[in-house]
Image 1 (cartoon, rainbow, N blue to C red):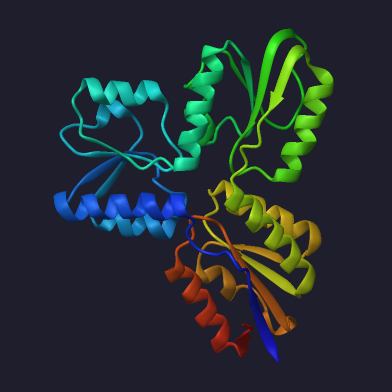
Image 2 (image 1 turned 90 degrees about the vertical axis):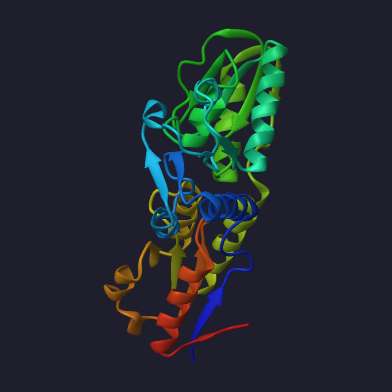
Length: 283
């Protein structure tokens, strides 16, 4: 029997579900809404919201006389203040977990900590985090430019990082920096961490793995990278057309995992596609 093995945690996480719900409620009431960048990193979700009246802008100066939603990844506080001064109606859909890190950085900043964020400096979450403190350095792949001596250092990770990678880079960093006091915070989202564990387990059990989610989604990409380490037949699937190019006859078992911004509707479409190709869901 050809089988489908589905991860325990799949579909929207709480933060994404909340952001999409807020956006849909505003659009239902007002018929229009603005955002800076995608509210969530999934083209299917964004397409649905844009059809309902959402307009995505690149610069805050372009936004005029329309309600505004802060994306789930958060926004730099300077941009929020600019919109507030212009009396734009603002709705905050920042993931509560990311919001907690904003408060953490603000408090650490008041205590004069030098803050090192391990993460992608181009990711919207990290861009927003940087704006909540004065002395912040973002560390991506390489341990460099950290040769100074510090009084107090706090290390924080982008929420969607691989926990293993965060520990690895954090460990190297601790050995390199000189500081009288160093604190490392585990800011990796628990939901992300659980999904990474499940993805690793499933990728070892099946012939192939489908990682469902947007190509611009950081947490989905991390899941794909983890699965690829254990299973060369791992596929990052953003749309059904990509499955058309895969020879399903080669596989007797396919694992299904998803990023936190992948809607159930898309997951159902993928499952139905596989069932039409003689795969049975294993409960």
